[in-house]
Image (cartoon, rainbow, N blue to C red; front, side, top):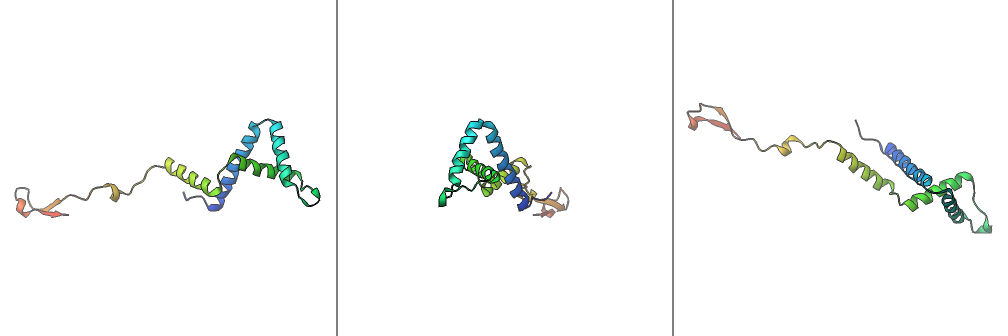
Length: 123
């Protein structure tokens, strides 16, 4: 099986980040989540005229980005490197035979055992 493409690995990372954020949101009381939303709303405030750039989707995405920073989730590259290391640790260790086998010993090729001076060896 080939290694996953960069695009599918990126999708796996985004799914993982989303799962971490959702798990965190489910672990805290609603009042705490609402206070986080209030902090995010303050960050979204546009200084010109005191208007807010608010839509439900924008707020939801902004809260998730805030939680990613708060949870100190790793960026994609660090996450992918960690995932590769974990996958390598789970996979069987494969070492080419030439790296673990000693150099071949002298092997008699011709001649009789009782005539040692006439025995040829392959080295």
